[in-house]
Length: 114
Picture 1 (tube, rainbow, N blue to C red):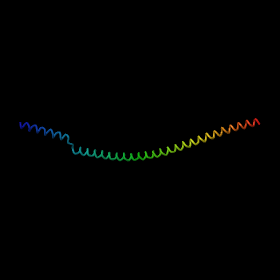
Picture 2: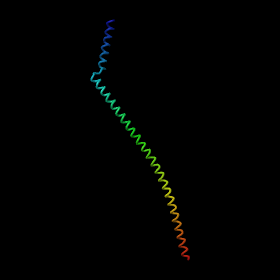
Picture 3: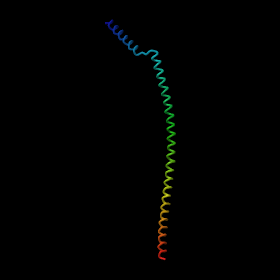
Picture 4: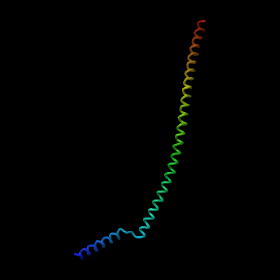
């Protein structure tokens, strides 16, 4: 019975060693993984920096667009006021023209009667 237990224990021990060997990586494999991880971390840092820079650029562009939007809105309001003023002046000129034409007609009628 004791030999069976020892034999089973040895068998498990051998199996564990074999499993550990299959899981264990060679020094070259570990170095390769370490280099890959370092490269990935370096790339991540570069990408983070690029994203930060791009974010700053986009924030500046957004601020410029907001300023331009305010300027254009003010310019549009000013143009609308100018257009309203011009419409009033045009109406006044048309009214004056109509009055002058009516006056001319009256003068012609009066001169015909005289």
